[in-house]
Length: 266
Image 1 (cartoon, helix red, strand yellow):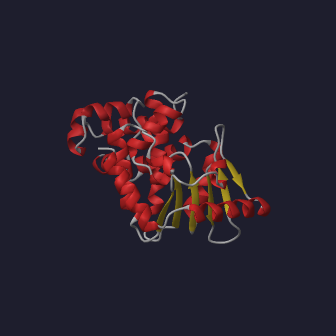
Image 2 (spheres, rainbow, N blue to C red):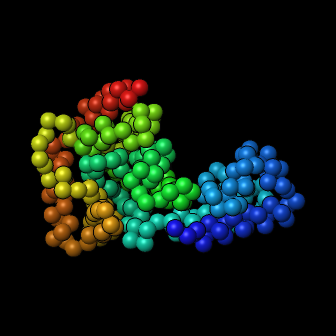
Image 3 (tube, rainbow, N blue to C red):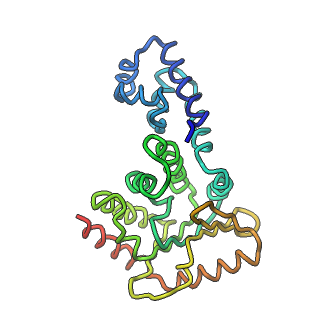
């Protein structure tokens, strides 16, 4: 995979601002409380810049927000073309109702869990993981804003048992689910092990309710995601959603199950 043009732009602008300020990589690292090796990695496009790193560099190097603007462009560029439209819908939605039979949904993943998925389930290798990983984590800010969307997520019980990243990563991920699941606008539900075949097993989906207009859905598959807008198709997914939700445990029982599963990963 080729380097992302915006990642190269960020690296070049960071190097230019640092040189203009008369700072070595080590000196900049000391001022922003990061290692010189990390500064070098970002300048060589081997690491995507994290938000805190970027804010500190902008401040120390008097970038006036330039580096943050370039980083935002990196995150958009690192998304697959068909997913960019969905992320816009996701960020504007008043509610998101989704089902995931295999893994923790992207909006609820920890960094360690997301990294393990990229390294084990995608065709990305090495440093290629950094930009899409940063983009996935940046999407999660929608849940931290002052007026977040209502998020209702139903997961199959197998999500709690699949050792993505190993025991340490799984424990951290499940404890994160419990923490997020206690927020007022987040509702988590697990379909328990005793349930046999049910509509959700046909695949993951999310239904978004925009501020105005009809609901829009998103389907994921091995090749690419699909945005679903036809009323008849969205209504069909809505029926699947109601059937899936009916099989799932209530919020309280779900958080108890997730907490117990987290302890089992120690």
